[in-house]
Length: 504
Image (tube, rainbow, N blue to C red; front, side, top):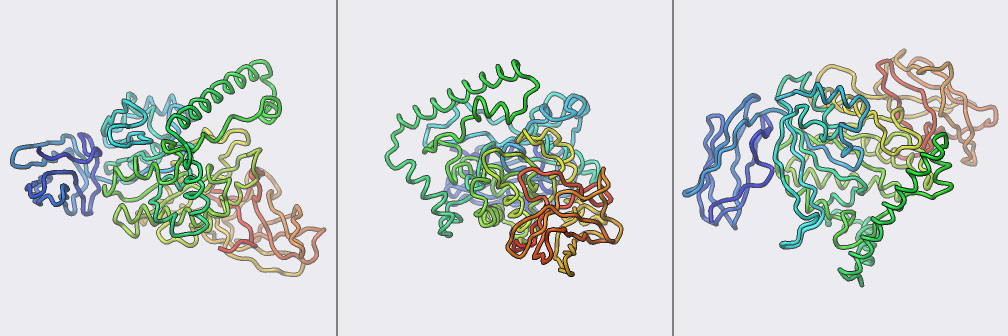
């Protein structure tokens, strides 16, 4: 029978330097497997139909050959590099292609980086025996960044990789594992949802109810009807924009409605809980990586009160499966977006701030200034990737640089004013960007009513007050789906939204 390696192993791949690199696959139990790379030779016997070869402390460089042998088979991978490997996870804003981002034409033209490699995990949304959806999907293996390939790379991941490469001067590998419109629940082991009553009820039980009496034929019919309704809507939207180019998206939605969403939930739905965890993420574990960059949360804005638990459990799950309890998780706090259906994005951002403050080995970048009021997919992905790289350089690679936004860390009530304190700023480093007055601050009266507030900077603090509030109990900043904010630090990073009544 011979052996079969996990699909992530191919020519042009990048392996993680200075670590235990696992090469795994399937083989007849008892077969001897031999692996060779960079002068190392390791051996193992297959057990229960599986094997693992472990190489230790590979040094950055290449190209190398990786050779895997058994008594009657030999596989050689060529042009293998050793460097830094990161998983790019999340939903559509991580999936968003470089070709669709601001400045794409020039970036693609200049994307000749032989030492940046990219593996796109095949977009399998359902598999059961021989049935795999979508049909005919092909694993193209690792590719080399160039004008011929980079257009369909994740824009955020590409800019992250490019910035890391220019700084570290070692090969960079990106494992792209994401899908638009997905909850964090889609990317987790079921046990992490089942162990919490609220999460189990909101995700697992809801799914079980949806499929209880659902036949395959009915699911296929509902799915086809959904995508037909989306297609019809897109045509109406296009016609409306041609007829009324000056009108806003709010006006458009007021007249023709919003795009149909979500898709029907069924056994083959890519949105089902734990689905993509099995069909995509588990296919790449335990591939050794330095860390994860993550951009997700939009789909969970309908259940924002659960996101603290959901996100923290996802991180724990991925660390377990990637066999590193301290695996760095560098994530994007959601930008501003004027969601017309739910005013909850600030609650998701707050849950992300909570995660950063409470879960070890996490880093968060703030992107509230990069949002677009009427587009859930802001086009400026370069700045997102640059900020992820900057904070990774500080937190993961321990460079002596400033990579963090100002982060709320407490308050004091002084008479009718509230004094806000921040982490990651020194006196004089807070600034007001592009204006003379701070925007986005509100103040709570003793009955928890919010009022617009005046705010000003004093050294490394912000003082907040309102003529309408004599006995304040707290402050909120950026506490809406979409609101103008302009508190930054002196290297151009925006302060994170916060609410002093939240528990961090």
